[in-house]
Length: 181
Image (cartoon, rainbow, N blue to C red; front, side, top):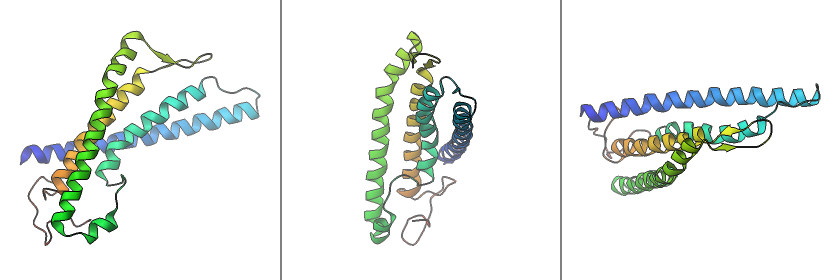
């Protein structure tokens, strides 16, 4: 299954890259906020546009980290209940959860495409006054994060439900489930 192995590896590498990018972005945002506070309290003048930058950046940071959260099983999940279930029931519950997650982000993805294109073609901006932030980067980040979330739910289903290992090969456990469950 070279395609599956390649999909898993590509998904993991891209998810980790976006997570690191989000962490660096959040760190930079923290520095900007601290500089704004110091500027406002010490020098009597805040940095213009920090509010607008923070508001749009938070959404982008969340969607940058989404793929990694899914692949690292950090999304909401009740492992205690899963461990108490027989292997077949566990697979059914995991399959349903992964399918619902994929459908949820497919709905977000499909609902964001038109507004993203509109924001791009009309040069839509958010904010008034000192700094106007373009809307299209945030909308396209939602599309990217949602698409990666869908792929990662499929990858998680291949690994957890269909019993493949991280290399895309069939795994044979005593109960057919990954060791981390």
